[in-house]
Length: 411
Picture 1: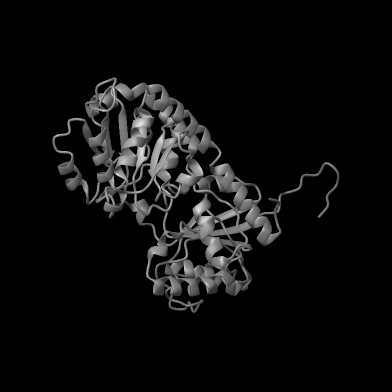
Picture 2: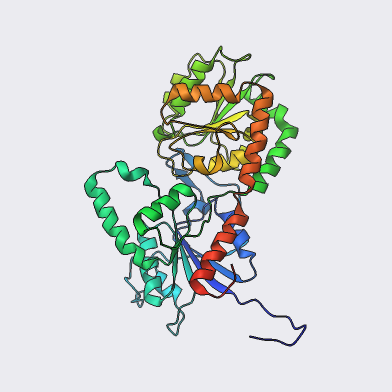
């Protein structure tokens, strides 16, 4: 297409549909950023609205109403939960009208590409099948990693068969990090198209909120009963068995008396393990339980703390690691936290220790808390490292995938 010299040319837009289970607090800022691209016409199709109505989170064990806007700044729709009686669309009624939504009234595709989050749900699979029936290329993004290879041989064999067939329905994958990329290479093959779309958070938001929190640090210290001059170790996540806050408590016990000043351990979150953890902490004057805290409040805890620890077993990524690093807090994670290899180099942003190895966790804490200067330097390194793992890199990866699959925009 050509135009007269000096004429304004409207960018050719790629019509992109994104199918996901429900509005997710981590994803909303990214969707707003993608919607700003002049040549990407994004429409998000949700399967449920439970997260915007408020709900009881099974992991936290409490009623949750997110205090960040989940639906602002981008186009979205909620797919119907039941079909109309006259609808005979693809695999009705359990597809929730996905096939009908992906096509125009005249039967032509309504979108140039479909982005799907995950592949294990009925909605995701029907979206993939419907898109293929309409000739719409599918981009697949998921958290999967190869840690599931501890499953039985039969389950792994059946999974391999399923993914071998699924790969023929996918145009490209959007790996969230190196462990996820290895997963796709294993099941889809080394030559299968991949475009890195890293798991990221709104780095600028967490950095800014942490900076603001410096002004109210004294108030939060007073609220938690924390005396100045003592280091602060932070755990913030769901209090579930697999998160292993109990490992951190044991490491904390081992740490007492080994530093010039005994640290505090602040545990943010709620869940099924809270009573057990409180019993485990009985008699430890330096432990504090702060309960569930909303996303907008967490930067104040990151700013207050000298180190953040996530000792989880089977944690495919752990976005709270990104959040703490963006706020300038060094991090210690287990080898079962998927974000570790992409975001942490031992001795720089923090440490990665063998999952379940409490002495190794204790030693990592000793090294980070060796002096206030050490923790501060690592916090600065953490902020610099995660700055290169953000939404701009996400947009770049998505654009590369759309350029490859649709040939309608430039990468």
